[in-house]
Image (tube, rainbow, N blue to C red):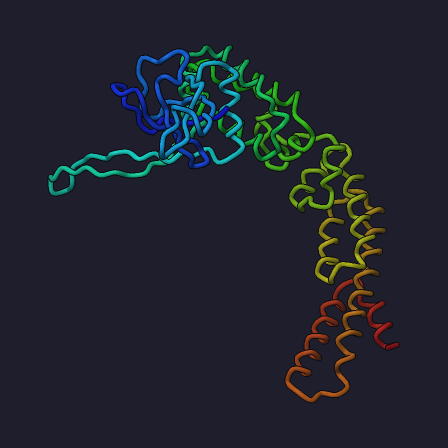
Length: 341
């Protein structure tokens, strides 16, 4: 089945055009409806199938719609929601009339962009009770949405569906709905909600942090930012989690450049256990000094003698690298090994 918006319809002649989000237009005849609507107008959502090319109702210019019906059942709504995960915009030509600043009347045609899902929400939900709306939204299979789409779905509910909930019932409506979502989402979605601090969408207090289960974080351990680790360090498992991450960084340090190795110190500062912090810093000191020595060795191989301005720049760079490191804790070992080169 397909879903689209009526672009125009002549109720006297009984035909018009329906557009879909993939920029396809379908000839729409009143006879394609099993229950003929009293009247059809631009912007009405229609659910339909595509007629075969040799069908009698197929237009010369466009494919035709068959088995058409207005958006009425829950099944129809879920059909429309298949477009939520895609670009659901439909371009419709409209006539604009107005008056210029000189008082002259004008009329012109413009292409307007309309959201199929938003029009469907208005057509479908405006006559339903809060209880009916809640049941329909909960029944939608949110487990097929990834993290970004889940957040967009919740934002869509707030912005486009909540307007059909009485003001005095909105807070309880959203609270109960999002709590239900939180009890049924998969780990990937929960991680995105935590990362973006959208806790209210899983029924948690919006202005406080939420200690996400450790097993949800572990698949993303390598991509966690310093800001994320600042939150994690205060969790019940935070110190151990940060230690495991740093040890992984240290094991991978041989493939890192000098600046990447220096960034490990920032993560070490998150560790609360003093002895463990000292031990990890010592390990990184050794790795960093080894990386600097390798860099000096590599660049010095090209300097048999100073014969150009570029050679002088290399020497100045090595000098800067050495003295910056000398001010670090790696200095003592670095000086000794450089003297032995």
